[in-house]
Image (tube, rainbow, N blue to C red; front, side, top):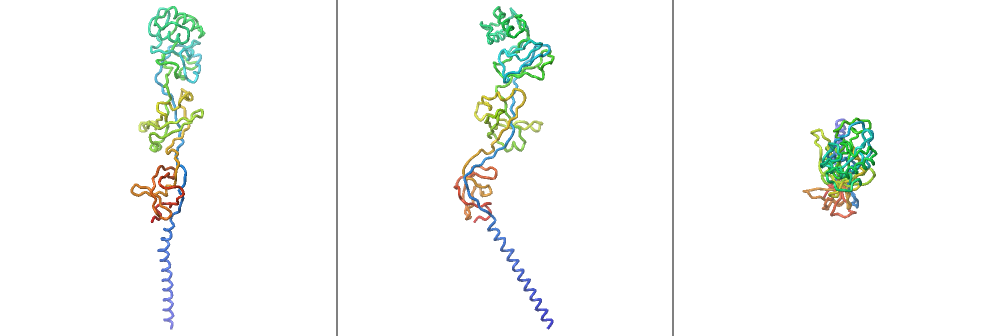
Length: 355
């Protein structure tokens, strides 16, 4: 009797274990299939826009073309500020022991005193200056005649210096370019109290337009192709449009990585007719926004909704059917597409349960 009860109990336990195991097995087999059928959500294609931009600094600097030396000797007593860093013929650049040094056009540097009877191209340059200032009406003959003498005296009277009729080497700095032009006086050398000995390169001629570059990291440079649009905010709040031209700087040589910039309109300076906003001295930093993906509008979907097979893109509708599309742009996880209208429900992610 006891043996039969014991055997029945064992059979009962085995049956219970078998039922439990069968239920567990059904759970293991059935639940993944249920999860797979719901392992996606849906979204609706809609009208919108895509764009991607970075906020970066832009550096602007006036390149120096050449330097011209000083011939005056003595203590600097004044360095007037050039109006907007532009100088005309006759502009006083600085004063040495109260005597002014003025700017003029000419390829022959001042090297001697000019007085009555002198002949040469440097005399012609002086005569052109005197004509520009309205002191000489005759042509520039290259001969220091009586009319030139009278013009020099009148000029000296205007400058407030002794009317000797003699022009000393330190009185004029000739630069080989037309004036007015952008001129920079090296204020690290020519400053009040400095003692000039003659021969110092003190005046720099600047290019007709400033150079614009964008300092970037090496990784940023890889993501910014040539032709990328840049919008620069000028020192006075104007918007200047530019585009990326080329990578500059060799990191292996310890140089900073920079992107070159040029005006969006060919042949024009980036700063248009507002280049005076860029000081002639030093480097000016400005805010800018660089458009990696220009703003475009149309039908958009999350990038996760896109399926790509054999180079072809598609969406998977809510019913599991493929919908071929063309991707026009991608930015910040959103794709701009052609081929599907707004208002269509599609699966996200696209490859979750396509039929």
